[in-house]
Image (cartoon, rainbow, N blue to C red; front, side, top):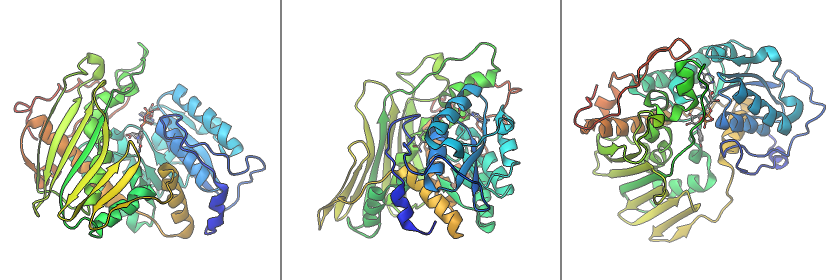
Length: 428
Ligand SMILES: NC(=O)c1ccc[n+]([C@@H]2O[C@H](COP(=O)([O-])OP(=O)(O)OC[C@H]3O[C@@H](n4cnc5c(N)ncnc54)[C@H](O)[C@@H]3O)[C@@H](O)[C@H]2O)c1
């Protein structure tokens, strides 16, 4: 695995399939695979669009990896996932009937199995619990963003990440832009002073609506909600935490992941107001203030038929950096004008290439601290928008508010919290 030329056998495209994040593998031979003592076994928890994509990327990262265990609460999701993966990877998708776990207890069964690596791609409400379980069970981890939906969850994630470090387990996050070569080089230049001292940051994730899936009348109340988990803040964290977190993360990257002093913001629900859209907002506007006077402005919306924008503009006292995720442009204007002309890469594949190389090399990776901190910024943004208050970082991190019930399974009877109203909704 130290042989870099191996990578030349991996031919991937960023073909849009299954959630837009499933790359097509046409690399490793699909027949005559023999398990040996170096074979790494992978368990997939959450077999939706991103989970299927991530499993494909794990199998594409290293020829001696097999998928052996899967968990989802819906059989149809699991079957779609396994069939797609089998088409791409043949017998390396080696999930025995007894290792397919359908139900809320499936994640525990995967954790209890002999897999070496777990892929955590359920909705984020489970992430802190899953990270704790995975670390306790000694698994290497790929976990999708966001890492939690509330501050108590962030503390659990930080604690689990610390133990992962002590146990020399690799922990790689799905904050995918951090694995994108053009962004790595652009942000490194900013951090190295290409635009002087950063004075402000402007980040956006302004996009249209997202999917809405049919539910069956005989499903348990939580299963019905889970089918459309995006729209319930106690499952997703709201879209500033679940989706816009990517641009908030890049904004944080630009200033060396410093912690803000406070945040103030607004937000609401104007266009997407039907009951089927649960209790989340459809727009946010937040300003994060830092002790050196830097302000980071963030706008996000999920409203259809509006103008779209996704990226980060970083203003410095000697120039400006623009990262445009829609057009794929990375430019710096300043003492020296620059634009990224190097190789682009499939960032989703890169996450797994680095994860599996780190396991093989015995040099564990740990994204724990910054992945928790970026998620916390999203949670803090939601807190200030929901309440209408200015809140310090310390207050936000020490918030005791838990968005959902402790148990999320078929027994859960939980009335949706009302849509937040700034000035009325209290900070807890
Ligand atoms: N990095 C990225 O670009 C990116 C892109 C898409 C999604 N994501 C993240 O990936 C995660 C999954 O998103 P998705 O788009 O794949 O959603 P999805 O709805 O397609 O998949 C989630 C799956 O988890 C299953 N699930 C729900 N509760 C479960 C439980 N208790 N045990 C096992 N399975 C359970 C669902 O049935 C579903 O199949 C989210 O955290 C999301 O934010 C990241």
